[in-house]
Length: 296
Image 1 (cartoon, one colour):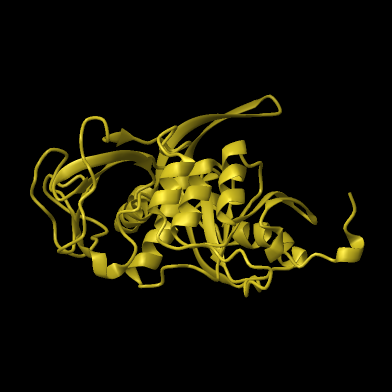
Image 2 (cartoon, one colour):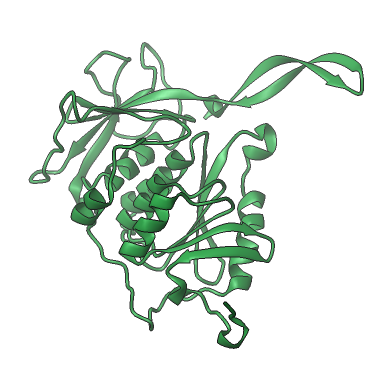
């Protein structure tokens, strides 16, 4: 999709030399998510994988858990029109369609979320649903419980974790051109890359990953490791738990609430993953640690 990046004129100053040149920037546009024709949320995102983004968002909200619960997702024809585009996610369109409004149609029998002025939310590219979610909300809506037993089948070595940031960065195609995108990737416990998505918002990148998994009938992601390029906020930990992902790793710091959620749900949470160094904040039973080398 051409709207992933845009060109802008920039004045470049290097060692006192001034020049003018075009620069490639990551695109950021609002997207409204509707359910059954009614507005539910607006998020600032990088265009692309919009249907997956909407589906993943609804997984994190506890509305969807399988492809069978999703009837279809349609683009609405324009910012205010109730019309719809075709059933497939088009990469380009004509007429008045802005491709910034999507309508999710739930399958028969799937409860429609409470949509009201109080429930309608606005998300940003940096923080997601700021302050909306809580530990109690995740506890009551999560469809899958994470395996907290010592003999969990998902085990990952510190050496494997250490290699993930470089593998994530190497797979970021748009980041190399713009330097302005977050990324989320799914890996196996052996470090094999399964999927990667980029977006101006780190929570959107995760929603796109989870939404694609739902569309492909792969939820829960009970054997996957989720690697994110930024910090590990509560929203990202929430999205991992709601998708049944047992391990969340981040190159930067987690928040205190993210750690609290990880401890309560059994999520393995790794932060400050840089080189051979990392902090394991919760769920250490999935990390193959050498007991003899553990101190403190």
